[in-house]
Image (cartoon, rainbow, N blue to C red; front, side):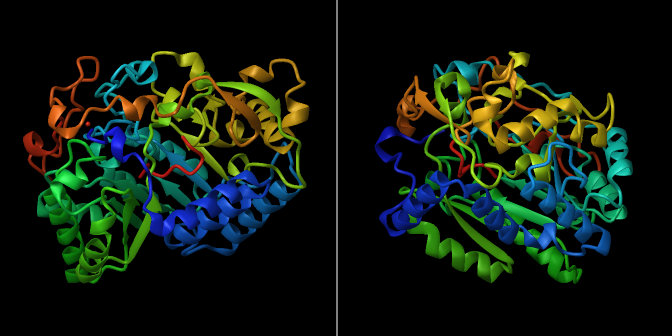
Length: 441
């Protein structure tokens, strides 16, 4: 990680007006609507494409449940996010895989090679949601390419008529056959994260990654899709904009256009770390007064399932607590393998979450509200920061002073055993919140 404190300003002057507008929108009670519309527009290639009458009816049910703030919902989740594996090959500065550098939350992160969902358990989820849920995204805090059977998972979902999306740093040694298998697996949407075109710029935030490797894989993916006349996957390049990489943006846009990329998305980068937004860094001052709509759309439209089946309602709050040694901080709502997706979706814990986002003021007076997943959420409560958000970013030394020694308590994530796909020994290298999650793939 090589983001030093002298360049932590997230965006250049050319888009500060947009950033101020985003801050204003975020402070309004209608933020959830703005965010939902933005995400739907950006992800329309895999969220809405191929929807049947049943899918549209389910979407209408989700909207009705949201507009009426129902505790017990009638519709299934519009999108389910499955964390197929939390493992990653990089140490991105914004992520939970970053070097701790004295950060106690990052020091508590715990990863091991067995943390990935099996094909059988993934099949169990798909069998239940077939014909009910239209879209899956197969990543959360890890890189999905760390799962050795990712193409099999995509194929299972495709056979069930479910669209799939993955976001990857693409900084892997991938042979032509491995890329071809991925592109022909039925994957609907592929997002590739490129935050610069030169290694010195790219490595500022994507620590441990190799930009030449990323571009080679992207070039091969576009070529394979063109040669095989594939309609899918829709290929998107995501460019997180910082001061240090803004000068390479025009050239990156032209390069992606020439390669045949379908979508080039520019997002404001997050100069801090997800751990900065953890509830333990804040004190709740008071709950916000409810508006005419729920203050968050997540509990009505989406569900996040971790690799072991544990469920949380969103990927924005408590994200840095999900893989720590402090299991109580996870605040899971249930486990789909102990019961079912539908049982968890309408469980008492999920109903409490929907009540909280609909009326945080009333929910804060209920016994045990401090144990609710949404407790101390920046969207629902006025908070007082106990620790300054810049602590982590300011602790990062200049590039010349950085060490490439891996963390002792966080050994390099094992390369997926892609026996017939790629060279396992060269697959990966390890030298590796705000509400607008700039910086997450």
